[in-house]
Image (cartoon, rainbow, N blue to C red):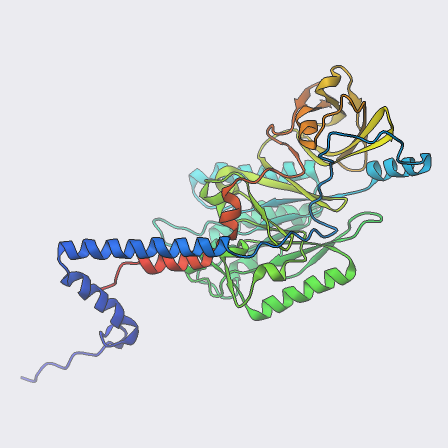
Length: 495
């Protein structure tokens, strides 16, 4: 009887394999500890983890905060915070006429952003699919944006349990819900980007390129800013991992080649005098690269992103202004909160409003300025975008102290309305905040229905929402370093 053959060596699982030694050693160490020793080990590991997180947070706070360099396109103060007004005319009649004409008739351009749609299959998902289809078919036809920016996670790519992989059935849903409709209507510039859920275990975005509207992921687009206004360059930032290794692709990665392409696009936009609007899935603090992403995008008026689902639901409004002056604005997800964003560029300002779908009517006050022509009269010029799901017959404004004195807005091109209010210096609100608080907007529809609105109500905003205290921290801390620390400290040893 011949002896049994020697066991086959499996070097992949051999204890001597270098990349397994520390795992097996760690498991043997844990098994060799007593109950008290294990508790002590866990306490020390937890303390090290908390210390590491504290150091990361302190490092983020300690980053030098230079005074914001506000470019021509960015945020402006707009309204004097002083209660005292001038007591003499400041303009000639010709200067005054030109000023009011410029304030009321200048054009503007607006966009829509939606993020983290997470379309998926199943009977329970049909309602969500129809909801998003209504947004694509109806809502966008009422708003008529210059472009729709879809910042990642188009599909969910999750089967039963935690198995993550690209599912052709979900991509077919996206194709039928979006691409077929947008292509057939041929009226909306739809710019989509992949997120981490759109790239599980894929190298070249195979499913995205096959089913998305814009398979050319890195292509910039130029949108007209209107007569006498600079064009808008839309710059996509695709930082998804290649390949998209599960779990690790929660973080983004920017290659040197891609970084150089971004720098070239930023320079070209600056040389052309264009307004630069950047967008991507990952917030800049969750992108790992050889340099500082915010430096590359510093020439942008704003960077639009998603991914964090409004701080995992902890923060309704997440945005901050970085030291370069660039605003980074994260959008809450569509999948659970049905949020989308209307963003406009008006006279050198980036303004936006996040809307819960469906909300009607929608009013975004894009600009407020005041001028004094005589010692007895102040002129307030107000510009606002008004959208509704039914025809609008008129839009009017008033201030609380002027009850009964409605001022009709002048209808301009598209959804832009402007109004000129005349108030005495003695009765005018002393600050911008007071004026906005006292302002009322009346939207009258041809059906006879009317909506009396104030800033702060659902679907009504002025320039931009107030940031919460935690938002700048969530968008400034080195999130990729924090994720690595968490992974290192809480990953159990493998035996």
